[in-house]
Image (cartoon, rainbow, N blue to C red; front, side):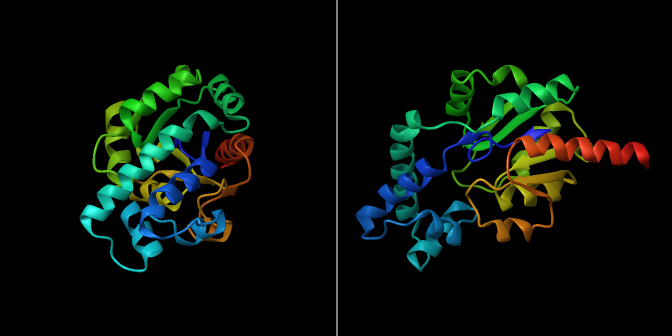
Length: 217
């Protein structure tokens, strides 16, 4: 199982929206609401800002927006916590023999520190964050992650909160479950054609049902 971090195991949606608003303020835009965020969110993240601005954001503007976002996010980070049930789910799956890893588009070095801070690192055979361009799509990173840990994509379940997670899973031939935690409207998540769950504990139920179905077949 490959977990996403931001918005999935880590409940930081409120902090993300606030950080976006701090980045938009110097440009005379915003503040946006959580609903407004969901209306526009996509990846690559630059396209999200293109949508908010109603035009293509220049490269220099994008670099500035990305910098402002991360500065604000880091300042707000101490107010965020792991999602409800995160540790329980990780422990339950480990007890059932499920191998788990973590792949996030959050900067790698900062991700490793954060996961350790909350004591969740023992559950993962590998933790990979972003080592490439800010705001990039996840598919190529997922392929590299699976290659690194030596796992066949056909045996993998990706769990994330965004359409980009479903697209990445489809690109490598993995299964996917999306957690409805805020990044998208639920209706948008359902358009991906994969199961959508309301809580992390529902992921355990989904996996158990899938394993039962496989045994019956």
